[in-house]
Image (cartoon, rainbow, N blue to C red):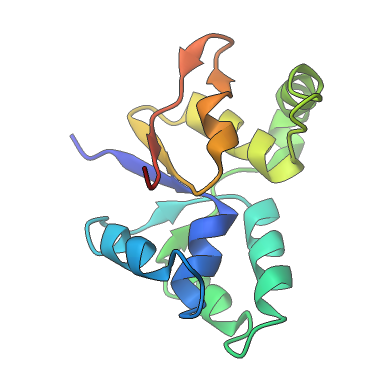
Length: 138
């Protein structure tokens, strides 16, 4: 069974920005993943904002969406209560909207892992107590 990969902002930025310190690691991971990668609009927004300040810019992110390399099945409107609950639970971290959406996406996507550079995903739990499978540098 194919494991779905849920994409966080950090790896998306590192993939596009060749100057990013994690670029090589992400390129290696990316080569082992069958598209599409699943994410949410909050991640796309964060990545485009961060990449706007680089030579590459955000166009490659939008191109990945256009070519269906990235998929956006998550609608915040449909999961607003769950996301709000997660953000309250992890307010001391603090949890961003994008992270809360990704945790919720993991909860509703069976057999999934999060591709991330964010160590907070080691703290977050799906369905209250279950460890979230992550793909991250050691």
